[in-house]
Length: 224
Image (cartoon, rainbow, N blue to C red; front, top):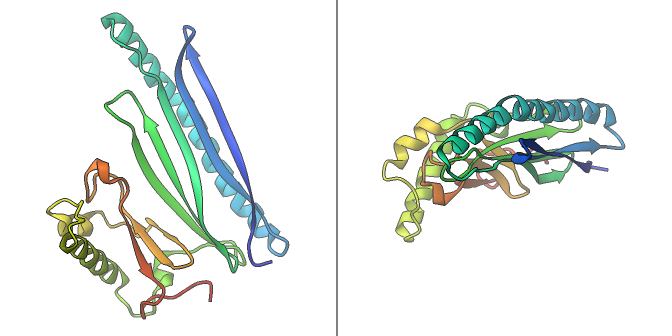
């Protein structure tokens, strides 16, 4: 079997203060099972579950206390009480040839005009149990950071020509500033590089993504 079986685990709760619902959170994380590499899956599962429960503790210790402060402020000034929310959900993007890649969207609404989503991601080699790093997906002696940045800038220029430009005018500077080697995941087609909200485009643009196909000569397909 060259893929892992995935069980979705969900932790959710509603936190009340003075009989008022102030915080709802829903946190999802995967647990992995493999016929041939279960010991590696156990280690990865521990890593994933520990991170999820750290987030639960943070919700209770920080966000709930912040929600209580907001509640008291609202009561004093007779303004609407806003319920805080946190959703932490994952999406599997590659699960073949013992390469598992996924991203997590962490959405939080903390009483402002709108919520914010932050994305993180992981890519695992199930055979070894190791996290795959972006640098390992390019041929040796390739300046992969410059290559990726140039590719993204070219894609943005192309979208501008096609009248589909949703990026800030200073996108080249922003790409250089906000590119993060940890912000990637794999699909069967290639490497997806993403940026957080507001980094290179307005809020309405969501989380910008750029696919670098495996067909690019500098790119290594870990599934091969």
